[in-house]
Every structure is written in structure tokens, then in C-alpha cells.
Image (cartoon, rainbow, N blue to C red):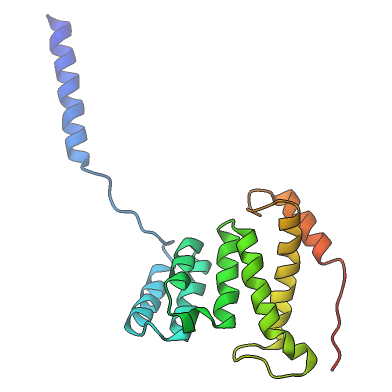
Length: 178
């Protein structure tokens, strides 16, 4: 009889502890240092959904907070004019890389290179293109091309292959003289 009473007491105590703990608490989606800045950028982007600068800044903040999925959704849900911007496409490509979608990132980055290529020939390029963006997009597309040719989708999951792809892609130097 004593064993049965002891079992009931333990079970009752466990039930009380479980009831006191409640349901699982909400956890912040972003790191503790990022939410205030991100909240302000989210409010700005929500107030002006077609504002390219606000969307781009928010997407970059999501990437800085290591939330590429949020950046991808933000870009994919943007108005076509916002999505077509070369700088937004460059941020989108980085989000795809961070999400482990290198083949899609290569396609997006190749569009950025194609759009900004006239800069290398001294011609007029779309708004947002500058030499730094072109160089960054060319470098990233070279690295992505190597990763995709090696069959690597998620560079973070395969650090050795990623290092080899980076080394292969940066082996040659290009100089553009104007």
C-alpha cells in the first residue's frame, strides 16, 4: 500500500510541475541584437511596400541576422519593379546562397552580370549598376558556377568543396582598363 501512495504522490508532483510550466514560450526569430533595427526596417517597408530602398535594406538586415528565408520571401513577394532592380537581385542571390540553393543563385547572379556588363564596355547600364556591383556579381557567379559544377548546393554543408570551388574560381585575375 505504501508503494502505491508513493507512486501517486510522484505522479501528482509531476503533473503539478507540468501544469506550472505552461506551454512553450515564444522564442525570438532574430538574435537579440538585431530585432530593434529589423523592426524599424520592417515598419518602413510595410509603410511603403513599393519603396525599393526600404525593401533592400530590410532584406540585407535579414541576411545580416542570418535569416535568409525571410529575405527570400521578402524579395519574392515584392512588386515586379522592386524585384527587377539589379541591387535587389544581388541581395536575393546572396539569400539563395545562404539558404543552400546555389543553382538558383547562379541564375539570378548571372542576370545581374548580364544587366551590368555594359559598364565594362563603357556603355550605359541600368540604374543601380556600378563597377563594384559588377565585380562582386562576377566574382560570386564564378564561385557559384564552380560550386554547381561540383554538385554542391549548400556551401555551408560542404566546406572543403566550397574552399576548393573558391580557390578554382579566384585562380585567374581579370583586369578591365578603360
